[in-house]
Length: 610
Image (spheres, rainbow, N blue to C red):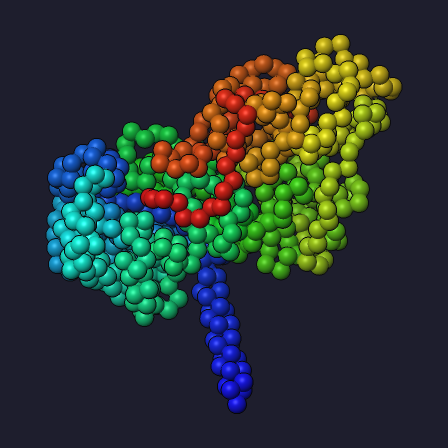
C-alpha cells in the first residue's frame, strides 16, 4: 500500500512538474522569437547629462545637487506615440522603460508614502509611464518595465552612497521592513496598473534574495499575470540571463538570454558622449545575438524634454531598414550551426530545414559552406532571387553572390534542405606544399587554396615549417613547377603571417581564421572579401600596441567599445581597414599585443550592475 501511495504521489508530482515546464516554455516563446527589444533609460539624470544615480552614489555630485535636476525635468516634448512608432519602425518587438532607477524617482504616480515622483516633484508634473504603456499596448508591442530594487533616496533604505549607509539593516530590521513594504507596494502598483509582459529588475547585488523577499515578489507579480517574464537580476529567480554591454564570446548556457547594450557609452542621455557605434556595428551585434539564440535589448536615452537625440533616431531607422528587409531571418529563428561550417554567423528555422547565412562582407569569389550532409533543396537571397550552388567536394558547397545583390550591412542567404539539417565533421584536410603552389590553370581555385591554407593555420598546421620561406619573404622560391604565380606572390607578401606561426585563437573571438606568432604576442587575422564595416575582436584582454596591414606596413586605427571600468569583461575591438588596402585575394592584419595573448571566455550571465 505504501508503495502504491508513493507511486501515485510520484506520478502526480512528475505530471505537475512536466505541466509547469511546458507552461514556462510556452510563456517564454514570444520572448525567444522577438530577438530585438528597445531599452529606455529616462530620468532626471538627463537634465545635467550625468550618470544615472551612480553620479551621487560615487560622490561625483552630492545627493541634494543631483535631486535638484527634478526642477529641470519637464518632459515638454514627450510624445509617447512617436516613441512607440520609432521603436516599432526599428523592428523591435518589445520595449523596457525605466519606471524607477536607483535614485528612487518614480516616473508614474506612485501612491506609496514618501515616494518621489515626476507627478509631484518634477517640473513635468506628469505621469510618464501610463501614456507610454498605453501606446505600447495599442501598437501590439510587448511591455517591459524596469524596476530598481534599491532606492538610494528613500529615507528607510539602508544604502545611500558608496561610503555612507543610513543604518545596518541587520540591526534595524523594523526599518528595513518598512522599506520592504514600500518597494513591494510600488511593484504591486506597477503590476496591477500596467500588467507588464516583462519585469526587468536591477540592483539585486545589494541584498540577498531572502532580504528582497524574491519569492514574495514573484508570487505577487504572478497573481496578476501568471505568464509575466522576469530577468535574472533577482538573485537567480529569473527566467533568462541578462549579460550587459559585453557581447558574449560563446553562447550563454541559458536557453533564453538578452544582451542589454548601449548605442554609445551611456545609458541615459549625456550630451558630450559622442562615442556612438555605427548602425553597421549595431546591426552586426544583433546578428551576433540572433546566431547564438539570444535577443538584443538596445538602449536609447531620451533628453529631459522627452525628445530623442538625432544620432539615436538614425540608428533606430537604419536598424529598421535592415530588419524590414530580413525579417524572415530574424524573428522566430533559433541558434545557428557551430563555427567551422561557414565564415560568418548563422541561424536556423525551428524545423531545422532552413539555414540562414549572414554575410557582413562583399566578394565576387566563391563563398564556402562546409560539413553539410543533408541534401540541399535550394539556395536564395532573402527576397526571392535563386543562387546557383556547386558541390566542391564531399559535404562542401560553394556559391557566389552578384556584387549588386550584397546588402550595405549584412546580406542574408537562405539555404533550404529536404530534411532537417544534418552536419558532418569539419576536420581540416591539409593541403600539401606542392598542392598549394602548383598552378592547376584554374584561377578561381587560387583563393580556395588560400582559404584552405588559413583554415590549416587556424587549426595549428603550418606547411611552411621547415621550408625555405624567410620572415620577410625575400628571394623565396618554392621550387614547384608549373608555379601558381598568384599564390607565390601572396605568400611572399604575407610571409610574416606564415613564418613560424601557430594555432589561432578559439572560435567566437573573431569571425574568420587566425594565427599566432611563435611568442603569442602577434595575432594575425585573415579577412575575406570587403568588410561592410570594421572587423571585430571579442574577449581580448590585452592592450593593443599597434595594428598593421601585413605586407603593406600600413598602420591602422582601432576603437574599443563597451569596456566598463568596473567589469573584467573586455570591450570589443573594432578595426577599420581602408578598402584600398584590402588584398585582392585574402587580406591579413597583424595585431601586436602588449604581451602573450590573453582571452576572456568565462560563462556569461547577469553582470554586476546597470
